Image (tube, rainbow, N blue to C red):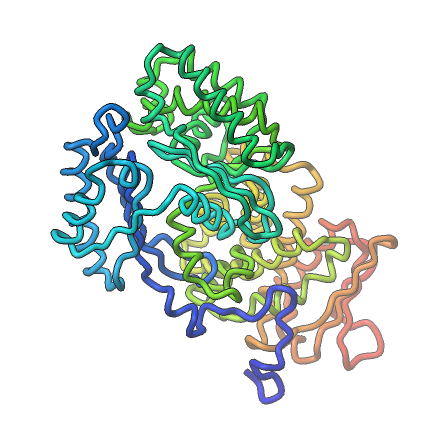
Amino acid sequence: MTETETEATIDWGPFGRPLFDGESAQSLKRVGVVDVGSNSVRLVVFDGAARSPAYFYNEKIMCALGAGLSETGHLNPEGRVRALSAIRRFAALAQGMGCGPLTAVATAAMREASDGADFRAEVERETGVKLWVISGEEEARLSAQGVLLGWPGSYGLVCDIGGSSMELADLAEGRVGRRVTSPLGPLKLREIKGGTKAVKAYIKTVVADLHDQMDNQTGMRLFLVGGSWRAIARVDMERRGYPLTVLHEYRMTARRIGATADYIKASDLQDLRARCGISDSRMSLVPLAVLVLKELVRVFKPKDVAISSYGIREGMLFEQMPRELRERDPLIEACRFAEAKDARLPGFGRLLYDFIKPLFPRANWQRLRIIKAACLLHDVSWRAHPDYRGEITFDNATRANLGGLKHYERVLLGLALMKRYSGKTPDSRFDDLFALLNPDQMREADIIGRAMRFGAMLWLDGNRQPGTFKWSPKNKELTLTLDEDARPLFGEVAESRLNALAQAMDATLTVRFKRHSSTSPNASSGGT
């Protein structure tokens, strides 16, 4: 920092001061959670940025603890053996990674089985891991909090499907409200006698009761949490030939869900499983899960359906966050962390954002956060080979595990970063992804990228603005006023990049220096 600009005096803007170096954030590093479900047992170790943590480690073992539970009342014996082995492994892994004590929860199968308490004691005795067997309502609450990790301030209905149960939770103004649970997990449905007709009738009755319990809500956004929902979404992508296979924030409609249900029914499940990369055990549950989803959509009539990769495990992490962290934008915090870790001049992203922001006077807060994210990420791939930096930044933005990004926003962000490294027309192999953007969004990404490409030439230091832009959209006039100290930086390459920006904006360009009353000899004026 300079003498005149201290940490306390910086205007951090609407996104607030970075928190990932604070004491409360540091305490969240290497947080290990174990989720013992009816179908799978999973370990996730979170690490990294305070508000949008990275998945340091993620392992799942399909144990089917709840298989046969309705008939026997007991946990699946083979599942017990596999689950105990998995938890023993997870405890050893967590110790080697330097995690604190694992936070472990068990859900429907463990709370319903007559031998659930016995297995819980065996796990603690053999592994040292203490399992917390939670109620269906608590499971719903944690899943909803997982959704809030990715969508702070969300509203809608969260639906979490596991092997033996399905939970609903209401979200309003970023808070969890009413919560209900039901026996609509596909492992339970598989044990219903009477074939598909009987299963459909049972689903219809239970969903109608859930609708009553949730005060007959209709027309809300439906957030889907759980492996079976993600598998259905992956099949929907395959059916449509969708170019971006990131499941988080993938959107579906009632009509598409119906078409995908028909597609699943008409397909060879083994062939479909192989094409979609879904496990055998998961694929066997999909035909039942899609019947539940069709009825949910028919009764609750959601305005749209969004897949959330964040659920109960992320909710357990969210539970440990102080309120100040919970309310932050996960995208901005993740990008700040990436900049602090990988950029050559950490902190310059904030200055670059302030520098180019006047070029977008009509941008709302949703678009400004994408511009902010791009500026924070503009230099994190500098170690890549120059010929591939554009591609790498595009891949990172479109496929990274980032929360708070719609699919088209991923592509917009990726294209802007690609243009930051290269002014050339992108390779045609990305055309299927670019099809997610409309022409105005393509143009905006181009302008963001070219503005960053020029601004990156004007490094004075990490805390000083090189100058200011003034943009008049009505008159198509772009004026750049540079500090005198920036004059040596405004060389041939910088001027060329500035002209390319003005051309992309269809603008008349003027360049001035603060200590000169007339246009600088280096200035470009008139048409570009």
